[in-house]
Image (tube, rainbow, N blue to C red; front, side, top):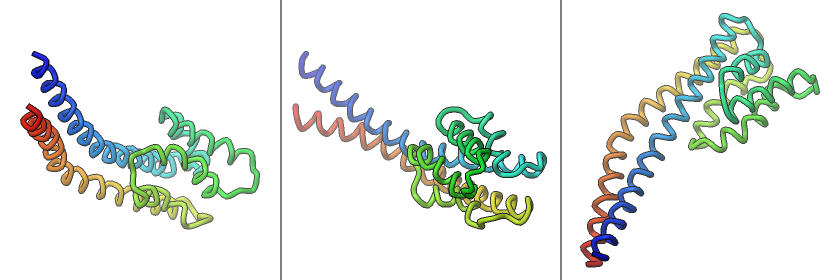
Length: 172
């Protein structure tokens, strides 16, 4: 009876590890989709609301929750203080913590922040173009990851379960 209980625990633990890896693979795709949604909100605020980037941060922050929305709100508040810092500096600094917590690679973060690279913006059209380019690249990356992860997720769960079965056979 004790062996059976131990075998069930080993199998459950190894299968759980496989499901954990599956969730990790899906987490990056979810994070990329969230960044795409944020850039879409920025684009629509610029396109239809004719807002500046600091105003867009405030409006987008109202629609976002958690640390991500708080960072956008902090960006808008700091821009309202007129300390002389550029929007790019403040945005990067405020978004450092929420972006660091997301399961993203460095190139994903840099792609999200790429619209800041033009420095001072001439007009809304240029801002909109850079935001749309970043969003499209993140969408492409997310779609490719979804296709790639479909197989990886099955393998992770399968290997976890099979590893647990093999461990049970070795120990018993």
